[in-house]
Image 1 (spheres, helix red, strand yellow):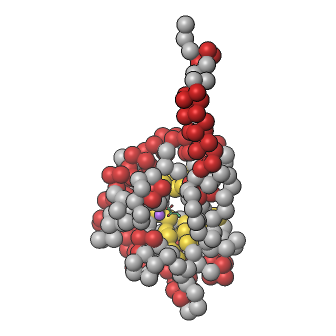
Image 2 (cartoon, rainbow, N blue to C red):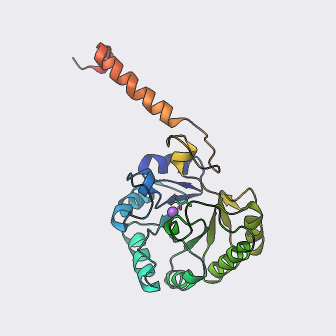
Image 3 (cartoon, protein in one colour):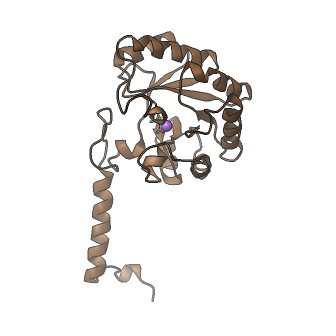
Length: 245
Ligand code: KIV
Ligand code: NA
């Protein structure tokens, strides 16, 4: 699974054979320029979901429910999911949280909408979790397993495990019938997910330990922009081949 927030990335990743595209609330950081995922709204994410679903032929498109759009009640969770399905044309939704959100997952899946869970470090609860840190160490590993089982029993079709010890992710993956999708959760999950701007090197500076950079898009784009600027200043662009007569 990779994130996607627009047409070109959705088309490219779909054609590259990525089976699941997530329109993550990480668009907050990676599209809208917020410093956390908390401020992004349903109205901001919906057009991105619509762009991605319009652009794929095969991939399953999962819409992430943003902070505040599902926590109030199972009814709110269902109403928001319905918006992402009807207006965004998503194929599934994702929400963060364990046992306490089993009723929300059940309300959504009962209406025919597939739900992906998300456990471990859940960025929308950053302030409750005491910051950006690995979850499920020591005795807390059992809680991650119990939360994952609760989501499965509530009808979730998959669960993301973010920043949990590899041993815990392996246990969860063993216990569940549904697939686990890891991010900073070791090699034993059924699948893996990364944010596309992280794995292609578009995001600059320090990235989390679990990110592998497969490209240097920041370098490619900044050198293209400076070359363009240089050539315009020097008068070498546009050339005759770019001009009409
Ligand atoms: O919003 C997001 O990008 C995510 C993934 C990292 C799982 O939730
Ligand atoms: Na997210």
